[in-house]
Image (cartoon, rainbow, N blue to C red; front, side, top):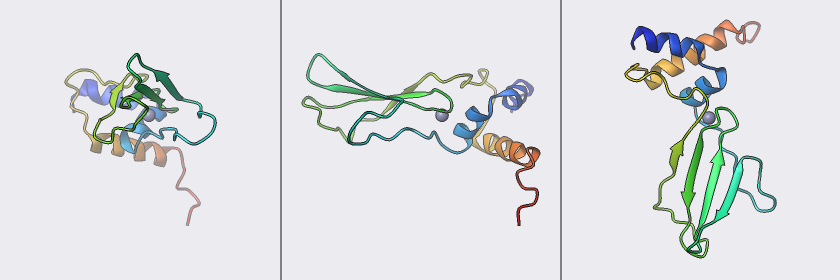
Length: 116
Ligand SMILES: [Zn+2]
């Protein structure tokens, strides 16, 4: 990791570090009312575009159904956006760096004190 990468990592919001160290808590599509952060938009060809927004970091993932709103298991999500999500180019930050930073913050926040 470059010094610039280190600086970015140490200043990135907690939410971004949590998502990069662990996972994005994507809202789940459920029967009934669409949950906050999920959008379904009709496309011109009878397909539907599903957009899901991460409540932590605002990264979004998008997938489009087959015509007739048939779920295409082989299609992959495309990902974009997210606040302060991208480190500087060439920063060399690895998943392990995010995990280490996440746990540094957990220790620093005193979350382990008094827990037995
Ligand atoms: Zn996220």
